[in-house]
Length: 249
Image (tube, rainbow, N blue to C red; front, side):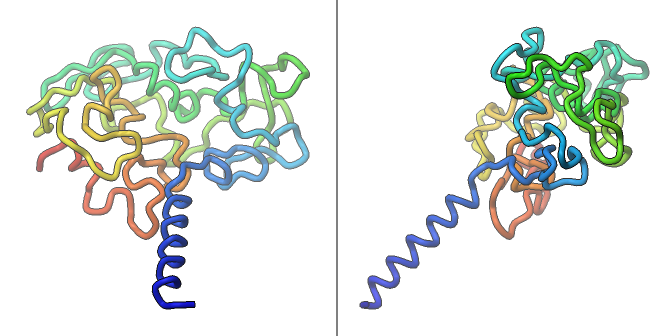
């Protein structure tokens, strides 16, 4: 085989590898809560837990009152329970260093994340049980760890338990105001971001939400960051690139 042919084959193999590594995957990630999931928080083996998507979505009997994600299979977190960034009490608007007001409670796109990460909502509680057995009367799908089947399990203590006090986290459900806090114009092009070509694409209804920076389906990144998802050998926030995407510092 001639050298040029070998080079072409090698180039094709590298291209194929690059496409594969950049593909989003939940299977085996920390958001795979089945018994074979990739994180420490997952279902016990031997129970009805061989499904992955069911922990968030269902093809039938979804929570139609929730607008944060399609075919949502979890209850909506309790309204009025969150203390927003810059607020001194729950269910009140807060202020940021830019002087802009946050909403009194997180909007639906962020509530989707907080329905597990608030440390109050049960991770294993769903609206519609999997399979053809109908609804789960207790509202519990499976147990995690050593807890009995049907027992509610909340996010354990640690960095992933954001809680209901959001005063020490980046503000969410806040309007993006160009120039405030050195924010760049929303028309600014962004590179290396999944599903976005400008800053405007990172916003939801003109606001910063959890999903502006994170995508729960991008399991290639331990923190599910949307920047450089699936890129081998480069940290998603290397050089604070996530922050500097919007803030001109």
